[in-house]
Length: 477
Ligand SMILES: [Zn+2]
Image 1 (cartoon, rainbow, N blue to C red):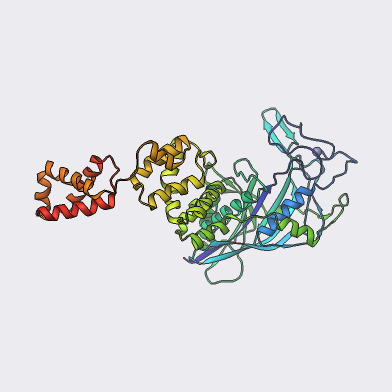
Image 2: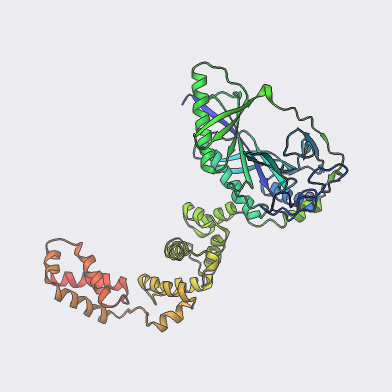
């Protein structure tokens, strides 16, 4: 590869507060157009904004979880632009003093090593209204106007579309776990723009960047960046001069389309928002927020591998949702066997949930009951095969595994005499098996084990069956 990509992401996150950033209107999604509005978010003359503290708290929480420093002095600025979706003709945002700066997210880099992707800044701002186009003309719905956002700006530390997607995935899972946003890319509560430029491998200077907008899924982010890489590479190879431009990802055509070049760029003429007081964020305030941050998904994932000895892949799957991660965690805390708990949760239990279309939250048995099932296997009371039957009952009825075992008479039979007799019955009824075994076809043992298991209705200890099948076959050889 002659070129490498230099990618940075700007992510807009809609905060899940009850009310808007600077007024008391609801942030509820949808609603009749212009029904969630008041003089403040309609930008009527004389209306004065007031900061919603919940916005500051959620921005702080995000910054702390992303290893950021906090700007103790916080001020809002006006970003001036004239457009129908902005009733005040400016947006309240933070330009000079973003609330958080200089953080990072760790990802697995393209070269296989752990890598820190820097976070340049996080600032608070308000959303704009929404234009509704029809054949009769364009109408504006201001329900979204004034809904609180944070913008999380990464440093240009990403090198491949896959790294960008991984960064965004991790960011999304952290935001979800913090409860600061519902982060639905399809509904626009998580929006991502990307800056991408190319440079020759080994070069340190940045190339000419393009900003790509309108990617509304992880897939389209990767596709758009791949497309941009090829487009810029082709231009550079042809000796063309690239210019700074903003491009839009067209999902249907699977290409980026020029929106505007730098010459047409806006000058926003930022200046301090005089209608809002500046904020001074104290140490106590920060520590108060810090104390509400629980263990994050990636921290859980690392702990599961480190303390419970499960493979990184299992830890990744188990921490995809908080419910599953907590269920696993509680089970292992009781039974002490990470690998067994992980196998059952990722295997049979996930299969049963998929078939029934239910979630971990809806499981009728508790982590303690699952740990009880694992203990019955461990003690040899039931075989793994029987445990699957017991689990099916637990899944349907939510009873204790011990109770199910007793009710259905499922206790494992460890009686060697009984099992030996069953093995011999199988061998007597299938003389060709012994013949095959004599001729070196040892695979036939599996058949005998299966038949014996069947004859004992799955209750015989499989370890003992294996041992006795071998003994009896050797004896008859
Ligand atoms: Zn309002």
